[in-house]
Length: 399
Image 1 (cartoon, rainbow, N blue to C red):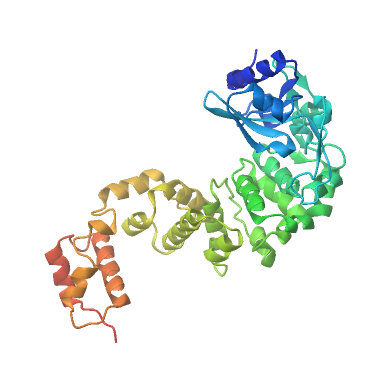
Image 2: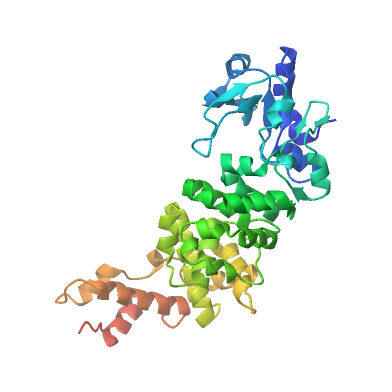
């Protein structure tokens, strides 16, 4: 009997088999099933060619049809369906230049990266395992399918994937596989940084992050990654209490705290991060440095984005002994007299009106922030008259 996660996807396999084609669940979903881990994306491999799959199913998205892959939409879910294939050369170190469709699942599994991913399961729950992937799962071992040097040379991203799997699963990397990773490590410099960073983010989120970092140091892969290669010692200075970090913004904030001379813009620009990631890293980093000097107080909580509370606590655990809790943060948040600057009883226009002869400039912003901070800290009431009175006795000094 198939596990619940596979029920709906089984409809796709049944339909393919009904029309005379072979079809299997493949890859990570089978691996995670055998490990009793949460099932993520469910991928299917079939002897049916892409054109046939398009004809058999109502909603099909030809995302990679030239390589045999389409997305089948079924019950409002997406399933990647790929024709059994053998890959040609990888001149772009990402995708094969050519593919040759084949008729057996065993041949298809030959092109997979690691034995633990070279697994297939039919609709009865029977496992096809031509490269002893189940044995490697039992021994908690990451091993390439076939010659490791060839696998990594085809697509060097597989090197970082091996590190990522070691971080997620806590598995050892088999000796020959590790040796070949080290030989090919320099070739990741040819990869698009977006692909590298995506895998790094998953690596740092792994439950066994210390295992992943051990192999990262062993292979010296960071000597070939933008920013890190300019100061590889950043990796050697990672906190002893390293815990999983669940976003790229958290990872960058950690690196910036370790080495403040490398600013956040350098990380986000070189790693081609989204503005959202940059803002998250800056917000978390500011909170860390403020906490270091002032501890947890109203101003820190006021300035910290709600979405970053958990990330801040995770990062604080890395560097400090007296670590705040989410409950501490929420308690302070509830006591804040204002939550945003828009709730302040006066604004920049009010300040400018108080000093009509003075030229506009940064002094308005600075004075507004001073007043804002005093209101947040509870030393000034959020009342326009009271705020104006304070400003009157503490006029701006622009000399």
